[in-house]
Image 1 (spheres, rainbow, N blue to C red):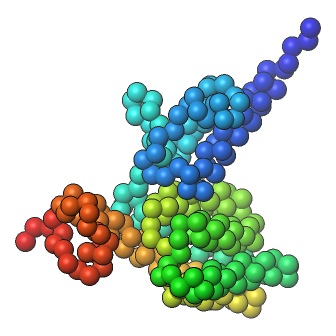
Image 2 (image 1 turned 90 degrees about the vertical axis):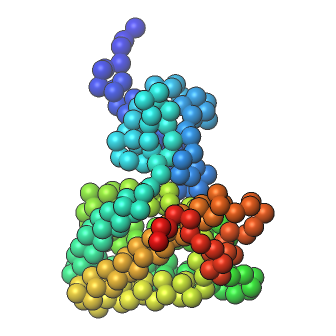
Image 3 (image 1 turned 60 degrees about the vertical axis):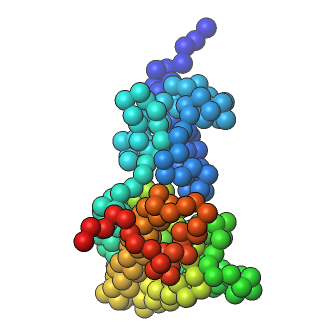
Length: 269
């Protein structure tokens, strides 16, 4: 009986490991797995119908990328981001995406690419319309998941126009890490959706006009605003956690936060 070449065996092993990585990434991106959630080697292996070895290898790869954390006893869990982590991830996004959008604006484009960017941009207004019809203050969790998918598609397509696969890979990994935190955040309001639509539209117009300076400026402002929102969310989340420890569970801690009827127990005068 003939034996498989050693290289073929390695290729198969790599393929299974990458399939496991993709499976876990999708669970994180969809919100099924959030920050701090445990990942069971056995459960993943059973779900995918593979042995535990490629799952263990995939977890090691994701740990090296900072997407999950592994303890000395090999317990794996989705990474929990610190405030400084968020700042550094957005600094990386700004450096790469601003450069990439400038490069995209310098080169001729296919009208189909521009049409796709515009369609993804205009889809933001459908979320606002849904919100207006429902009469709610902000997008719910399911709507935020769908919005995140549209937003990721917009930014990924922009990165593809820059024709640099390495930048696209790093930006997508960075956005996945940011997504881990974003899953726990409050939903977008109508005003914020309008602002995101306006900023995406500015980037698309700048590319259509092949104006790299304007495109880069619009993207930088967009990312900087998003960073401020994420930091506000993080800070509010920290205060809410503190309030839950300080006040009875029956109280609406978010209402206390919004009305200012609290004292942050972490503060020292």
